[in-house]
Length: 189
Image (cartoon, rainbow, N blue to C red):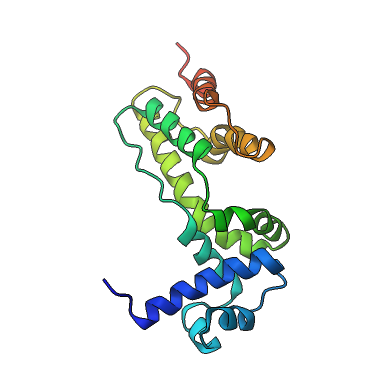
């Protein structure tokens, strides 16, 4: 199916923002430069995005792989599958090239960090909370686990290892994390 001119312009803008941020950084990339690189008018860019931050979040979403549902009926296995996915899921080359710049920008720009969190990371957290609620209902885990703490305990070790080992997470780490989590939060008999 052929893309409409608007869809093609949209795609060019998303590609241009990634390329320019890779070359110039986020602060050094303007909406004017993005429009010029994409070969579209500035009005076309602003028709789709309110500002550079909104455009960057959409470009990140466009480059991010969709997360599977993880709903096998076995919560422990679903958590293991989720962590394994996070441990070994790689970003596109374009996104991997600029990811450190994105994290640095988010650390110094709280409005951007908030939007990034809401539009990208909250969905992952919501899935995790649903899994934990299901496990608590089944009596596998204690009820009332604080969702943010649980997410930090489960996802934190995976992301930490990805960061410090350049994405070389040991294959057995997701299983170790899930088992440790279950030991800490299973109901006391």
